[in-house]
Structures are given as C-alpha cells and as structure tokens.
Image 1 (cartoon, one colour):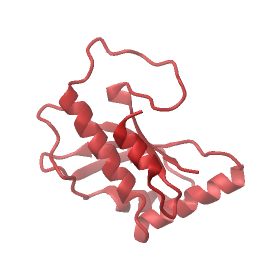
Image 2: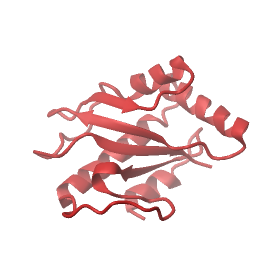
Image 3: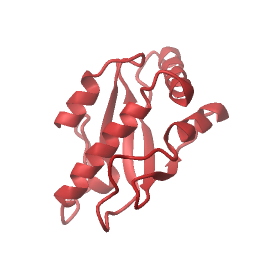
Image 4: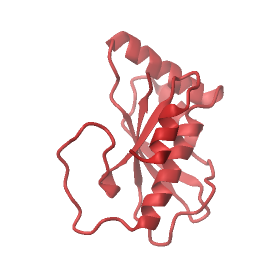
Length: 148
C-alpha cells in the first residue's frame, strides 16, 4: 500500500475517509487481488507519481465540508445505508490540461441528476498543484470508495 493511499485512508472527515486507488491506464489495484491485464511496459515513474498526486487531490476535494462534495457524500452514504453494504467505487475518468486544470470528467451516472452535477461541480475546473508530465496518457482512471 502506498503512503498516499494510507494517508487518504487515515484521514477522517464527515465521510469517514476516502480510499483512492488508481486503475486502468496504470494497471494498479489497491483492493483485493483481481485478474487484470499486464501492460508490456510499465508506466514511467513520473506518470505514477503524478497519478498518485491527482488521486490525493480528488480525495481531498470530495471530502470538503460543504457544497457539491457534501451532496455526493450524502448520496453515497444513503446508498450504503440502503444497501447495508459498501457501494461500488465511483470510477472517474479525469482529463487534465497543460496547466493542471481538470478539464473533462466521465463516470457512470447516478440515478439522481443532482448528484451527477455535484460530482462535476466538485471536480471540473479545479487546478492541481502541477501540470501533467509531457506526453502522459489520459484519461487518468480514479476509483473512489467511501470509507467506513
């Protein structure tokens, strides 16, 4: 488990913490072992470092105490209560422009249009601390799972 993942799991806010994992283009999984394809060449270390920083930022943005992040957390909390189990992770595809700004976002929509818009409002247009490395493959795929 990476330090950034441990740090995000250890952080407790109104949500109880978020675990953020990378998947897809980087071929990573921080959950239970799963069958997955192995890329012939691993992603460059610079890409991996950047992807971890993006994951941390998304986690922080979705832990904010008000606004759209609160709408998302409340909805996910209700889904967990109704299902009496952990809901499926929210898998996001994130595109980041040359200035480090989240310019595009894609995800499987929720049944509630307000929550779909809240996810977009919480993340789109936000600026990361750094721009992505040159020639980094996008989108980044981020899986967000509500904590306990």
